[in-house]
Image 1: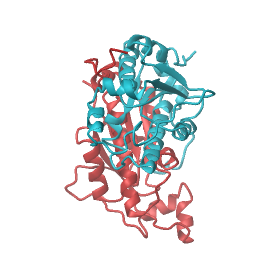
Image 2: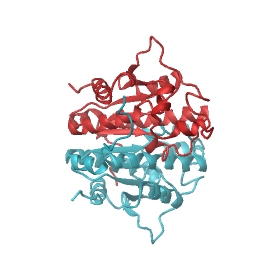
Image 3: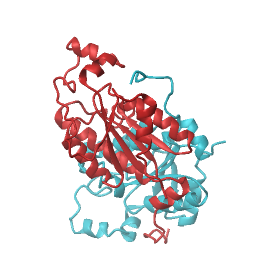
Image 4: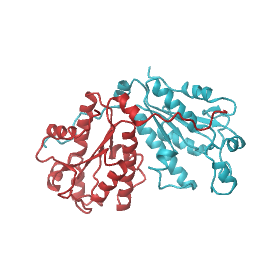
Length: 197
Length: 197
């Protein structure tokens, strides 16, 4: 292979992929307490965007904690590495033209800042799915809060482990899931998508 | 949000994405010595598949070592974790319907086995870009071998660190880049793609 040396045929660019897909790669990053509605909104939006011809990728605990981040726990250090890896993967998907719907508790301002730095200001929208601990406890969609009450879940966010709400001057979007129903929540998230034109 | 509880609106499935994209998600994983032609073939194939309307994602040292795996070195342990993470990311892209072109030295049978187990037998094709150390040294597209000769690159695969060729009974495909030119190499790799019908 005499023609092995690097050539000027570069890899297919992000712009070329976006043009092909007819959309702009970007990341909507939902954060909030367990039970605050992150995954429910992401799931409904995923379905709605697909129906509208968009290509999406949902990243959440189900497909990340069980795979890529299966070797991480819930210590502060591991939570930081968890978010770092997710942000790097979200960045790869955005660079391939996907609309990424990431759904992670992301409990601290510092972690959200890290995600923003990795993915890039232009491509990331942080969305706080706001609901009180009491409301999430009452919903308890996964039965987690019941286990927490029995002391069976260590380092649970909002209880033993802190959750920092966005500061008043934060650029993060807030979806108050105690005030809005699912359809309104999804509509609010959908309106945040940057169109390709 | 009274309708927060998990619904039966499942996430958009892999099959739905594949139908939309008109292709089957899969991973072609090129392995071999530095300079053996992995990235050159992946790059040319990326361009060719794009022209044919396919959606692809190249994963290689450039976009992985600088990001997701930026906190890993070249010890045996870190090489194992490097390949594990890449395989998990390749799996996510394949599940989103993309044709993944992964290009990593992947020096041992054990590492290739790990990649195969993570991505899954049906979705992964391992391709050995075969070229002797001497041939790669002569090509030296990145000037790496010159640095190795000066003792400036520790743990260099094929020298200080071993490279295991596939065994004779391996199912891995071999592209001999000393015998084939780039066009023939790319054609051989392209023929390995599973079509969606």
